[in-house]
Image (cartoon, rainbow, N blue to C red; front, side, top):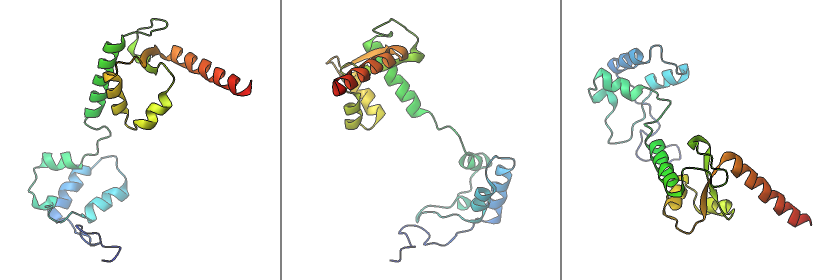
Length: 168
């Protein structure tokens, strides 16, 4: 099979939209802040997978067509809410305030590794959500809640001690 032909696609051919669909697309995109190149590409070609029905054959309503063509800058927010829920559960488990100074504003609270092994933890768990789930199920006391100031001071003191041991 030639390199330019991918299995399951239109094999390099451009499948044009019908004039009716082009008119719907134009109407939907009028005044929409997208590039002219993307607008032209959207109107001229339509590479669908084999077995997929093109939009112009689906008889979509105006509202559904607009929904499919709208370019959202934000996603549905599912993972953002999931991550916030995990962090809320962790703060409830570990305490809602800094363990050093007692600061309680959740905007500045951070999860800290007590034994400064965050680098190894990030190496093992690439996914930040997986790291949060591990913090939630951990019962060894490896984690604590610190405010941003205390966490930065702790990091500075650790780095200072590490470098003084290397040089001294």
